[in-house]
Length: 129
Image 1: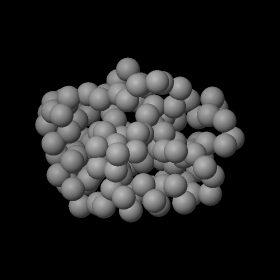
Image 2 (image 1 turned 135 degrees about the vertical axis):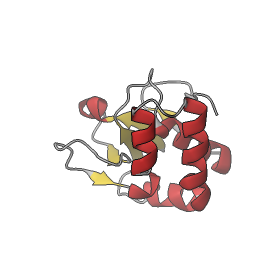
Image 3 (image 1 turned 90 degrees about the vertical axis):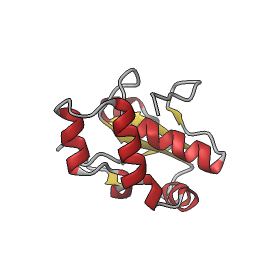
Image 4 (image 1 turned 45 degrees about the vertical axis):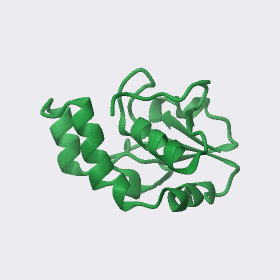
């Protein structure tokens, strides 16, 4: 199973869930693996962080510049091959804040039919788009 989560929640993930960062700049203390294919571009991140990009605009740009160039079945397969039955893709934002991992989970779920949910949540979280 592929989940989403965030770096601050890392200690709450069971040892059976393998953490994989998808942030452009993971925290300095994170020693786990990263999957850079799902990281937003530096330009898009800066645009969003400086409030020069709405959530729908971010959604569209991340989708077109990153996700549209990837095969979701292959991405899912690569994430699942990380060595444990469960994987959590991580970034910074808590579940009640918008983040690119929600776009990624929506894309994977929509494209593969396999539900990718926030770890510990029963529902698929989606913001805009």
